[in-house]
Amino acid sequence: MRAITIQPSVPNSTQLQDVPDPPRHEGAILVDTLALGVCGTDHEIVAGHYGEAPPGHERLVLGHESLGRVREAPKDSGFAIGDHIVGIVRQRDPVPCPACAAGEWDMCRNGQYTEHGIKGLNGFGAERFRIDPDYAVKVDKALGILGVLLEPTSVVAKAWDHTDRLWRLKAMPPKRLLVTGAVRPLPATDADRDRR
Image: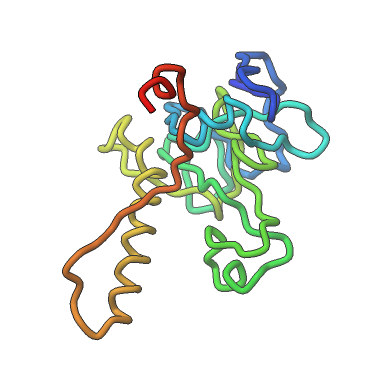
């Protein structure tokens, strides 16, 4: 099968290459990829700023924003052939910190988590991928291709949830809100430097 891969920390080493089918130990659900989202995280990985291949591998399959159709799933998994799903990017830390132990592994404090297409786990940027049922989210087929937006939407929902929790700690209702992001600035160009 074909996959979009990169050699982490090597800028612009992206390739479309043939790779073996995903092994069974990567998850009980086999998924045909329908769509893949690309965001600033992917841009930074391609630029060589970060990214980590799975243990024992030189290259990382990219892609953490996914939409797929179930090809095979265990009968007791809650998923059926033909279901549309999105993979959860971050996987629990094997040595849970307090956040992971409370089921909020996206807020891991000790950094031993893994992330599909980013850190230590191949991503969803292949013709097929496998995923554990605990890390798959069923998506209504009526969403069509827009289902690929579930992962970035979950980031916004998490930010909103945290904002709401912070405001509930205040005695007065909010009057203003500052929204910031974790976007790394692009390197300055010669034209930018000339303007300074």
